[in-house]
Image (tube, rainbow, N blue to C red):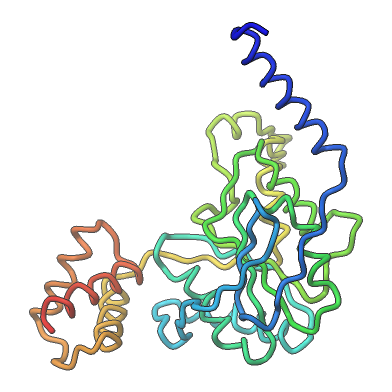
Length: 287
């Protein structure tokens, strides 16, 4: 065999394996040890659930400046944990304002009552039917947590998630909800060209198909919770809270206030995340 034939042979072998993967049945993933932890992470390469023993111990009381959002999501989660009906939740908006932290705090709040969280990335969403089958009939209540979720229209997980939320013939498990966080309200990029095909019939607006497609995913979440950039007062309040959490006992002075504002200006953002980062830096330098 000539050396020049080797790349062609490898290419044909790869194509053959790809076709075989589509034909052969998928192996059943091993049953996870549900008693090992309250949080799990889905490995889409190995198709297994890994327990997360040292998940972040953030409390609901640590989250300031988002009281309305916190109360709405807390009520939905409480309904779910207590066996009532509840909605899938999309938390969207400004970065660093507590979207992901809120989901983690909910686990700490309700873990003792049977809540479990499974974190999954968008590549793993193609395995949603497998995960639904794994939790079906379990006594625990599961939140499938998708952090910083966004799609391009040609990504496979997009259609899988859309069908699972509302549209698949297979019933969604009663003990599973999806909580997704995203900086994008509709989870997909918006382009000016999408709006150019919008039609007007008198005073009635007919959105373009591209716009309808993008909205159709986000609207399948029963709850839309929006997060907004912090005001200066909200940012300073959060910074003062995290200073106390990190052991600062010298009070809130003009010097600390000025340093906190300079920190936010240097980062170009006022958010809970930036406030927490300032508190760590300040306490590390002065204690």
